[in-house]
Image (cartoon, rainbow, N blue to C red; front, top):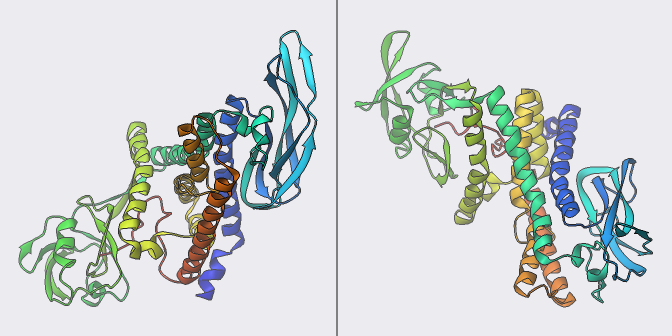
Length: 434
């Protein structure tokens, strides 16, 4: 356990992990930033990382917020994120109005920064913190000065850009390096150590001809014979080096649920108790055409959503299908040792997972704030009371903190145990062998 834990914290693994997190955060926050600008919201800072003070302000971009001729612009007090999670600062701002023949505007600046803690980031939009007196709706170019549907789109853009970034990475990966495809023939591509198949003398490359006298023409047929035969003697007839041999294999009962394979040997979102003998199919790398790569990549978000729905149906699988920082670090360490293709695949699936996770209707996630904006749309733009907002925010924060504790607990349980495959771009040869 300790050895696996230390392996996850190799300098190479940590560096890859931080690089992936930076790319993921940049894609997500750029979605918020882009649509905030499209809808005329002022953006004060685009930050990668957290921390009270930026380490580096690598760019300052000036912009203009146009205001109407009759709009009265007065000094205002604004609460905003300090750069520390859950912490806010308050300041008084006196806008400077510039008159031009083309109209009136306020000139402001967006700071693009790097902050000390590289485990997240944020886009600080003007007037994004609710005020007790409701003054946030009067801030020129402020988040809450815009219609609820515009706020909804700005919030949605972050998760959408996370998913799009992941899909684009997968398209590039599948159309260049390719993706692992299963060989559907009944040929053994993997034998698990100390498994029933290993004890019976089966080897990689053996072609199974029959099981208990029933002809076998595909690997999927083998799965059908094995998965419900725990403790039973199965006579495997197989061919090795041109010779026909036989052996007896006794499938082992597995207490934990495992994903069910379909006829193409891909894992589905269904889970069941299946007996195993410790074998896996042969696999090969297949480069996809651009069209096929796009089609394959576009299916990934849907599969992720289906997996989440499946977890609600079978919560027992939660500990095997979710992961926190330690699981992600371990996954990126494995990816770093596997090469650039594994790194890109891992980053892509993490990006898609982050996007979908942020759509959960729980404050302070984007989905929670989107739910508030949606409620205000039904209220024809009227803001929810501070009491309701504070109650929703407190309940959401409690749920998120509970989730964090649960995920960290699962992380520490998993370290040194069976590797989680949820972040792999394709099932590896050793995963979920039958």
